[in-house]
Length: 165
Length: 378
Image (cartoon, rainbow over all chains, first blue to last red; front, side, top):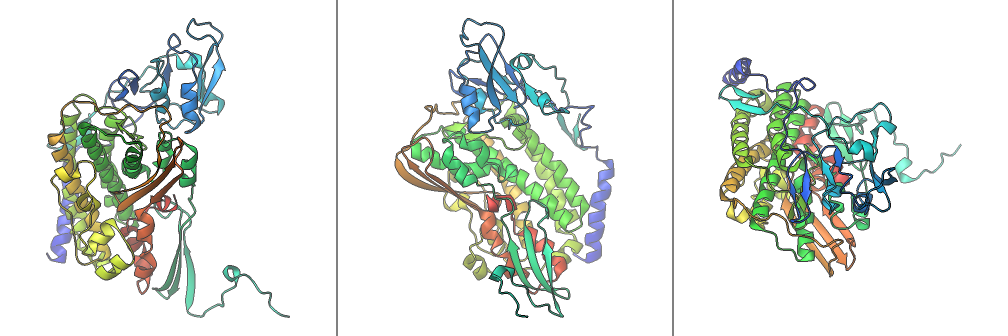
């Protein structure tokens, strides 16, 4: 192939893309859709359930304060600390529950795998930025709140190329 | 006045009229911090001294203080784009030490995840290669098309990079519902897209004239210097760990290795692109042959212990043969974890290739070696 032909072919390949739809996702307005409600784990079978590893969600009525999540995190990020909670629970004699520092968390999800009581799940919420370091520390009361997420864009493939529809 | 005697490294070199020493780096020349000290005579390189080690993180020492499962998140940090592949030899080794038998479905899912990761890594590598050569289209196209595969991995593992997906005993979670169809559709489109790169990049006469016959590594030198992966295959040696020592289910899958004879930077940049097409073939084949249901994870005891034993496992990563040597001594933590990384072995060829080349060819030769500084420093 001659030099001129090669250059014309390269230019032609670029020109064709004028007719191709935009692929990029306009992030703050559009958000990607994820699978399910987030990463969960079923201790009875020992297998996880696929989903995004985002912010955690803590079920106070299941947490026994056994510290297994905190022990699992010690070898990874030291993000989980056990703190006292004011309200009393029958299954949680010591009234301690995990508090997660998202400045340290690496979102590996091994704490979710460690929990044998279905108390700790991960959700689709990944927008956790804060103006202060203290703002990244989520107390058990904050982790109890189910996040509101509206994510609906998916990759769609047509003959005119792929887009985030 | 007598001159003070200085240690060898600090001795002031005599200024030369012709030779100039030039530091390239250590600030981020594309992928991580490393420095290349080159001595140039006019436009030609006369000596070269790569200086890695700026991003040493002590991964191997850290692994001695954590148990076999908790090692997973930090061991994948050296190459976050190829995180399934860098975990693969470690996980295979731990499974042999602990005597775990993993299920057939988990093996296939692992192969799919590893091949997707190889493509994600290669696309990132290709984007940087494009920007090193001043080809900004080749930066934007791979960076965008990589999103197709990252989306698949996100559905599969729950994270865009650093998946922490492989675990001794299988994989962390089963595939989501309807994954096979989405995967097939996106991988087919991805393959169609990367074939378009031929027109704009690989068959482009400007690229060919810049990279052909530069940094030629002969077949004998490639073997003698101990290079691996795409660098070795570009020099005409047909060596791929997936073919020579098949692990998991690679012996049941239909694929071939790509070999080129010229050994120049053009061949070294083309081989990963051809490998991506083979990866697409492997993924399609694995999706077809995979058992449709079944367990994917063997239950582990808390703090599993191995006997007094050692094991060495190798896999083919996006850069070449990646090995992991694990010694256990009846404790929950490994006694020693040693990663034998392809990046470091490919870097050894750099001083050999650069001598006699023009300085302008240095970026293309350096990056065509498929070298990732963070992985080499561990």
